[in-house]
Length: 279
Ligand SMILES: Nc1nc2c(ncn2[C@@H]2O[C@H](COP(=O)(O)OP(=O)(O)OP(=O)(O)O)[C@@H](O)[C@H]2O)c(=O)[nH]1
Ligand SMILES: [Mg+2]
Ligand SMILES: [Zn+2]
Image 1 (tube, rainbow, N blue to C red):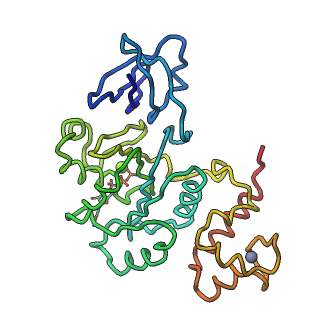
Image 2 (cartoon, rainbow, N blue to C red; image 1 turned 30 degrees about the vertical axis):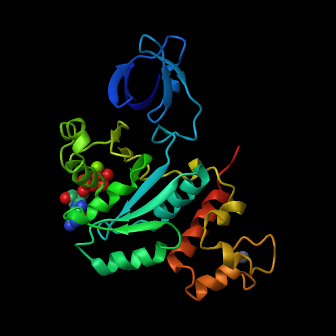
């Protein structure tokens, strides 16, 4: 029998197994620090966790295994921190995670949301909606496999979970008791069940540490899909795409073919990574 770790609390694990949620302990020979939310595990005849199956990826902060999709949430208010958004996009590329840019609160400023969508439409799937109406329900179809919400405080991550779970007939009881509107403190990582997948509400990505990207600064540009074709126009093969007149990326940014802010944030991240010691 194999199951999926939904939640971890002291020595106990909530495990989903064949549609049921069971509470399990780990076998004595297994280190419980080595079992994470998102892990697929093998259960023995007594219902104890006997083995952790091989992982696709493992994130340390927040601690989450096998993440497949990241729903990066932004809104007109609070003002988007696009440096962090771009960092998260690099992080996703690096870890084989599919990013989805979720532009919430379109009721407040639709133009702003549409412009942001235009900037990012060639970089990630983008969705514009509001949790105040039914438009948020389009996200339902995006929750496939193991997914996590990411984004600044107050962009509406918990509101999204609340709005989606209201129509999530199958799993209402698992959610509604635990979540209070706007009051969620997301220190504990937990996967909530949806029809085709699982969703974690986590605050842990909001200040993604550059060191966690584990990207060499000289290769950073490769994680910017919107830079790639322009990089072919660079005069030098070793171009860092940070300045100079022989750079196709710099040129594209000047002409507005690459969003200016995105290019500026690329340079900022490049410099930061350059100054981080890698081991
Ligand atoms: N106008 C408007 N307000 C919204 C919308 N979605 C959420 N809000 C409000 O935004 C505020 C923050 O929402 P939360 O869901 O708590 O935000 P969060 O991202 O979970 O914040 P943290 O838990 O601090 O990370 C609340 O006052 C919500 O009512 C929306 O679509 N439109
Ligand atoms: Mg929240
Ligand atoms: Zn270049």
